[in-house]
Amino acid sequence: MMIRERMITPSIKRTLILVMVAGFAVNVLLLTSPLYMLQMYDRVLTSRSIATLAALSVIALFLFIGYGFLEVIRSRLMIDISTEIDERLNEVLFDSVFREALV
Image (cartoon, rainbow, N blue to C red):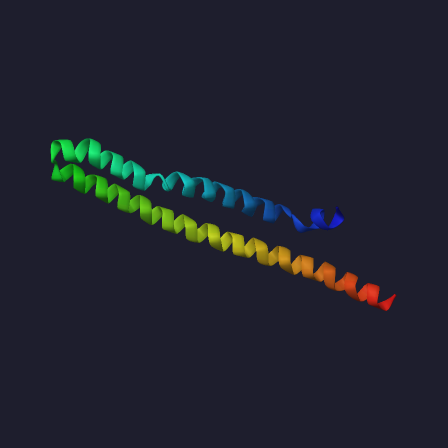
């Protein structure tokens, strides 16, 4: 229990909250493609409007760019957290292994 308490520091907690928020936003942005297709069939094909098609396509493009950006940020945050926890855990395990070897 002590190891677990020392592994999760306030900075890691803040980063995990950011990862959760980014993950939620990524999951919402994954709805871009189905909503784009729904609007295509509902609005563009019935009205045959090139302006509507262009507007929907530009909006979808920006949402996909935002999705990629958030996914990269989320991945980098997770790499930073896992590296920090791994370093702390390795230090504890290394000390305990050599302490046992000396006994």
